[in-house]
Every structure is written in C-alpha cells, then in structure tokens.
Length: 186
Length: 289
Image 1 (cartoon, each protein chain N blue to C red):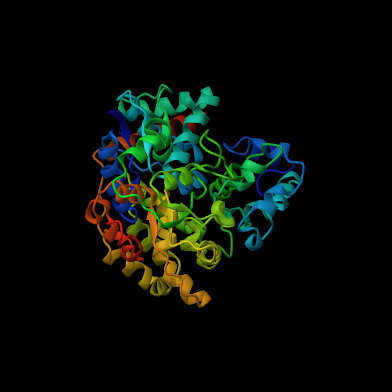
Image 2: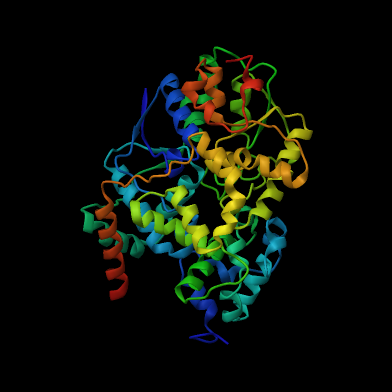
C-alpha cells in the first residue's frame, strides 16, 4: 500500500513535527464542520485523518486535500482531543513534498515552492517575484486575470518590482546548510 | 516610553506598506519606541513550514536569536509572523533535541537561541502596555458616528498564544470604541478571508470574501478595520473582483486598525499611508481628517 513502507504510516506521520497528535483523533468531525474550505477538499479534514489511521499512505500523500488548508486554525481551537489538525495537515504536506508526490487539482504546492524560493534568494519574500514565479510555472496566461489586482497594487505603491536582499543572506545560507549537515548525520 | 524590538515582516515592504507606515506613526504618538530588528529575514510563514517544518524553524530562529540580543520584547503587527515565530519558539521549548539541532545550525553564523525572547502582537502590546484608556486620552478627533466592522482575522487569535478569545475576539472592538467609533456587530467577524489561498484557489477565497463583505455591509458598516496585512490586502485589492463575480457594488474601505487610531489621534492621511488604500477611505473619513 505504501510507497516505501507499509503498515507504519501512522508512526511516520506522528514523527514529523506537527503530526504528533494523529493518534488522538476520535473522528468526531469537529474539524470538518469548522473548516471554511472543507467543501473543496478531495477528502474532508476528518476523512484524511481517518485515512492516515487506516495506513492509506499513497492515497493520503497524493491527495490535494491538505493543500486546501487555509491555516485559519479554527479546527485546532475546537478539537476536543488536541490533535492540532492544522499542524497535522502541514506535516502531511511536508511528507508529500519530501517523497516527491505531486497532487493533482491544486497548484498550492507550486505557490509555496515559489514563496520559499524567494526567501532563499533574498532572505525576504518579494511578493511580486513570488507571483511571477508562480504564474510562470503554472499557467502564464492566468496572470492576465490578475492584471486588475496587480495594477491596483502597483498604482498604490504596494507592489515593488525589485527585491531587497538582506545583508545576512550568506549567514542564512550557512545556517540552512549546517542544518542539513546535522540532519544528514542523524 | 516603552521600547520594543520591531519586526515589520515582508508584507510591510510591499502589500502592507500602509500598516508599517501607520504603525510607526501611532507608536510615536502613543509613546512606544519601536527599534527595527536589524537585518531580519522572512519568518517563513505557512508555506515554508508546509514544505520543510524543521528548516522553517531554523530561519525563524535566526530572527529570534538576533532579537534576543536586544533584551527587548519582539513586537510584530503581522499575524502570520506572530504565529510562525511563536510556533518555532514553542517547538524548541517543548523539544530540547530540536533546539539543540537549531543551535548547531545557528552556530554557523555565530548565533545562539537561548529561549528568552517574548514574541508579541502589536495590538496585544497596545492593549496590555498602552491600554485603551491611554489611547482614548490621546484622541483629538473622536470618530463619532463612524460605523466600523472590526475584523480580527484568524492568526491574531488562533491558535491560542494567550491573547484574546479565539472565536469571539473583543480587543479590536475595544480599540474601535476607545477612538469614539461605533462597533458594528456581524456574524462573520471571526471567519477566514481565505488568506494566501487567494493566489492558488481564487474562486474559494472570493466566495469567503463575498460572505464577509456582504455581512459587514448588511449590518450597516461604513468601513472594515483589521490588524492583519493579508486580510487587508485581500478585502481591499480583491473587492473589485468580488463585485465582478457576485454582481455586487461593495465599496467598503478596509483600514488597518493602526490607520484608524492614527486618524483619531490627529495624524494626517500621508502620515498613515491612507493613499495606499485601494478602496478609497476619503469619503468615510472626510469628517475626521
């Protein structure tokens, strides 16, 4: 069932930062009932948690579900079992990315990747560069639909085209490199 | 005068430049000294943590380590920076091994994170340290008669980091009242605007924004007030798109709470970045400016 492992997906999830609460879920459905985007999830928030518990590794990690999470944390403050579903969904996202899954029907992972790319380039996010990167790697023509919003922001001095680089950019690179050395050694 | 380390966040240099301008302006009037954290980097926000949580904690920790050197509380007006920096702080507090790993990484830049810095929201600092009583005392132009829908957004109060109620926040209402304006109650006060999904899931976010705008307008609001950079950008810059999709004629200015306070304490439009607002607030604020 799993791509690289079977029958220990729950354990794998619970060992990712944010995924620790997966075993606490009692399927009450409060997360789904509280979610403002549940109607566009491939499997609803409580379903995807049940699927983790049922060891459906491939189905979960290839799903677009968790990518629909808006990080509003409504489920997290309502969950009677402190599962912290928001963090759990982010843990599932990071597992999906780590293992090379590319969910269909959502371009959120591409947006996130361009966001992080912008940080790695300058130390800060350039919203303009992030948007350009996103449209270039998804559908450049879709950018046409954004002209009105982009013009609104540009003409009100809210969308600088150039990006500032922080002075400590090299330090940031060194810190990330060192983390990956430490992680690799473990 | 109370001093803070100020963490503006990336949006302060672009879509939320009005929040940064008005924050600095009212801080001076209210006796808050904001010392910008030198050479801060992006907090990582939700996207970084969704791709690689540990790496995102490390980049957040660079900011925390730099802030610790100042010995002051770190204050940010951005709800996402607030949540992200606090999440990193709590993960490291609860997992000593993670903190060790992060410090091993930070040592590459001669930095160390001890765990002493407090991460605070600007409006929490306004409520706790300045207090609404002092804000009221500085009001030169009470915003009498202005009907304001307070919109706290999600990440100022959720998950819980000890500030305000996660589902029925009242801090913003208290600030609106303190500057003399009228609070417009509306059921969607605590619902999500869609956040950064506005890029990849525009249809969904326009639907969420439509509900919010409709609710605020139906309940008689003349403007919306929010502390959140992303909520403001969405409701302001996409209001035209909502109107086009839902065949509506919303014309609701969306002010940062810092702009609202600024008007009341007698600052001018230029000092508050009001010209950066896309839905013009000129008409509703004309009496007070």
